[in-house]
Image (tube, rainbow, N blue to C red; front, side):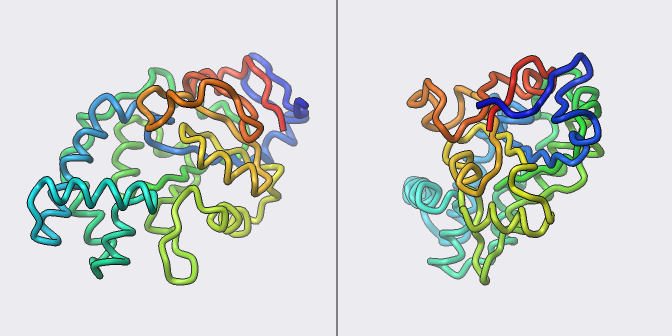
Length: 244
């Protein structure tokens, strides 16, 4: 079933302009607002492995295996490093992203202008660390378009880091923003994160990116996806309806 979102030349409007201003858009960062697979993911992989090597005095092969295992289990290597080795998570995140970020950022042209025309509050919700996220958004020229950057540094529940796809995190986000779930939209490239958002009652947009892990296994649109687009600009141009 379609929602009451009308699409005009000026963008996406839900139930008219007044209602649209009440929508909260939660945007993922990597492979959603920019093409992280083009250069940044490779740099992060190298830097993350080196951070594990340095933190635990491991060789490259052992560090790579451990990093991959923690990423698959927890959604973030840093969580495994904290839980199993007592490594300070903030220090590890800083160490694992200690490379020159801005020259590796690749985004869509006109993105700032299109975001500015999107009615409603706009927030970045990313499993990346805050300094990295702010640097990427600055390089894209869109940092000032967002009311808030909600990074992994802010994703603690009951003393533990709980990043996406945690359902508890999604509910915490809604509670802290004081927004009904029906007025929130998660825009993401990762289907597992969209599934949790849908379970929390949010609407969802899948930004398909072939470089996202396991994306090739999902050619269709599941019940947890309200709209599937090939780029965030396709969403912002407002040419396709978003269902509940």
